[in-house]
Image (cartoon, rainbow, N blue to C red; front, side):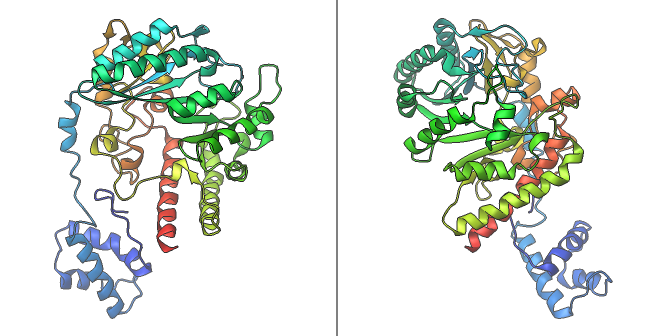
Length: 448
């Protein structure tokens, strides 16, 4: 991968071996073919014939001339203007219910309470939040609202009424709402599914994989498992949406480092849109992923990628969210630099209307930005997040994956290091591996 141009090259051993050497030489100003060749000839670590070396060198220098190798960084200067940009709010995460009917052991929301009290968002607060979004979205037409929790189906009537209110705002304000829903599925029924299929652009279904893993980590408060109840419902959702516009979303922990088995289990259940992501937890939690777990997890990603290639050849393909990287177009420059837009373009709204940078900051009063009635009161918090980008993070500067993870999660960085401009180290190692696997899958796809 050439980081700055985004070019991906499939190479043989000789090209792979000489690329770093040529980069070093051309970086020192040696551009002439003969001069570079002379510098490479006779190196003890290059046991190739002169003919093979010449051919490979010609290809490398040709790619450099085309701007596809050793490309200069054109983004670092851009970032200074990027920090000064005028931001608009384009997405809200509605904490429609600070309550939950499950007791997931790794839940950062503490069974939906978010370090506070149980509460359901009222219709009045929800309407004010939608009004706030419209008023603060500038000229942006497409707006996003995710109904989140806790468990949003515990406040389903308000969800329906807020969707109707949002639709009523579209034409008068030249806006279009994209609603999404994240649910554990316990309360899912035919009436809810019919409405969701009509109004929700995407549905996220929470399931961790194999029955024993899911029931261990996602039980009811009485301790009984939820797997048998939700699986048939989720299968119905996937089929009713034509295996599109949904994904099953799981979390793997130290308890199931063999998580590829959970991904493949979900695929065997018939799901074609799958996301199983590493838990983020502190060292005090027995299910936390540690640095010692990384070698096992790296091999698991390789195992999963190889199996995906095999299944694709067999006509049984499925998508794995963390391998779905657009290597041809990719996101716009702003998203490459700053990621999800938390604290600036994307905010979370509590049941009583408080605004936070994202759902993972909810309950931390240091990050309380304002409320839906008065708007953003702590513009200093917004400005801090506006300056959060890959060039503000020392760990990101030389990372080959920086334009794909966009610096990672600000909440994870803060929770582990007390600074949104740091990076969560275990997460970084796993992200680099996922990008590597995504590239391999793209190459394999091209060769099918």
